[in-house]
Length: 76
Image (cartoon, helix red, strand yellow):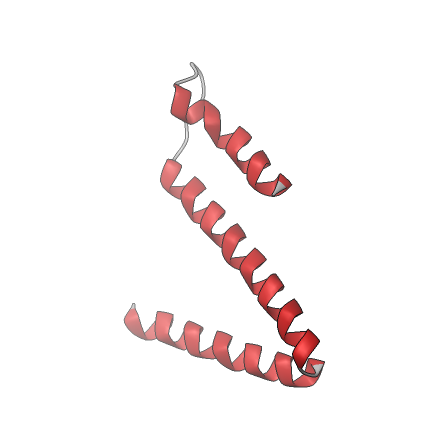
């Protein structure tokens, strides 16, 4: 939650039109989305490790990441 507040403070001047601040909100949005995705991944793995062994969770996580990367490469 603290990280989200920090990200908002960094991007806020772009929304209120502060004088010298220039930048690309699209890139900020991608970075924010990546941060949220990684946080969700960490929380999901933590919950999964409570129910299963670390080896099994790592295997399933790796397979899902491989499929996601393969799909991204195939679609481009």
